[in-house]
Amino acid sequence: TMASEPVNVSEFEALAKKALPKMYFDFYAGGAEDEYTLKDNEEAYQRITIRPRVLVDVSRIDTSTSILGYPISSPIMVAPSALHQLANPEGELATARASAASNTIMILSFSSSYNVEEVAASCDAVRFFQLYVYRGRHIAANLVERAERSGYKAIVLTVDCPRLGRREADIRNRMIVPKLKNVEGFVSNDVDADVAWLKSITSLPILLKGILTHEDALKAVEVGAAGVIVSNHGARQLDYSPATITVVEEVVRAVKGKIPVIVDGGVRRGTDVFKALALGAQAVLVGRPIIYGLAAKGEQGVKQVIQMLKDEFELTMALAGCTSLKDITRSHVRTDRDRFQ
Ligand code: FNR
Image (tube, rainbow, N blue to C red; front, top):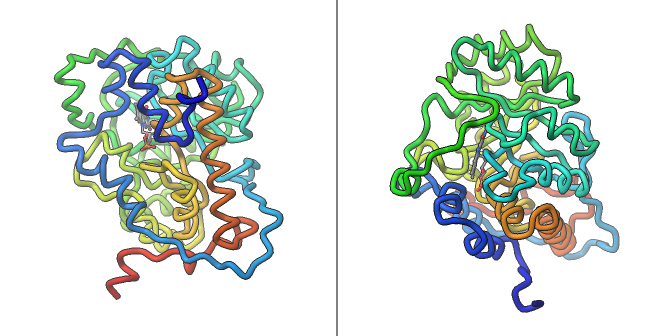
């Protein structure tokens, strides 16, 4: 019925909760330990206000941009997340089709339910592949080769998982992660060596995902990363790591425009996307809302989630007096730090 139609992205969470077995919903929704960072990822956005410029003609708004040279309809991309088949039988195939229909880029998780070739065959689109480099490297080598051959355009190396974070809901539920199509083992996390090695086996650009400090951002530039993703893994790894939006500026300042900065974690509103861009990010990734859309309504649900965020972002631009992304500047937001200075 119309009454149950979600009007914002957060409402998909309740629909997903109804649609899924508790164990799976908890796996998707949960964070590490106290879930302090899980809450803070969203709340930190709420502490930032927008300084709208109203004396601007906003009859035309252009939300489009590009990432590593690939055009996307808005700076909202799909984060890599594990095991979409637990949300819907079509799994990543549905997510991939919805992302393509939304003219945005999906990053396929290393821990996907469908493999790289199956997702590549689902539809024509620019896609990136997320990688963990396990000791021995043969698994990574095989996957990178297959991803490159099936047309993925970048490797997103996740560097915040030397070990798995402690997710208590999964422990309580005895959540047993079904055997991953791509594998298991121990992540090496020797980033210098791993990136050098990756560069010797692929010509694809390499983004580092999981950066939270200026020190690591500088190192990412030094090792030749094509971009960094400011991320705390959706608060599933180190609890009490900072809310990602609070460290975007630090990372942006460190990389000095040499490589793009993307941020994820807690993006639930178009205003969040606007704030991230005002603080210097080039794009955002969305994690859980995509999975909730998939669980609630399959491919259509994922499309709706992306469309809602994009519509809200477009409206935010108009109400804040920005007609294209280059108009969104640091002076359009006010953070805690601005207030205390
Ligand atoms: C993730 N994330 C993740 N990241 C990654 O690099 N590889 C992975 O396989 C996964 N798997 C995964 C599963 C689930 C269920 C979640 C919720 C998240 C992290 C993901 O890419 C992203 O950083 C966060 O999801 C962003 O935060 P939000 O949007 O979920 O708040």
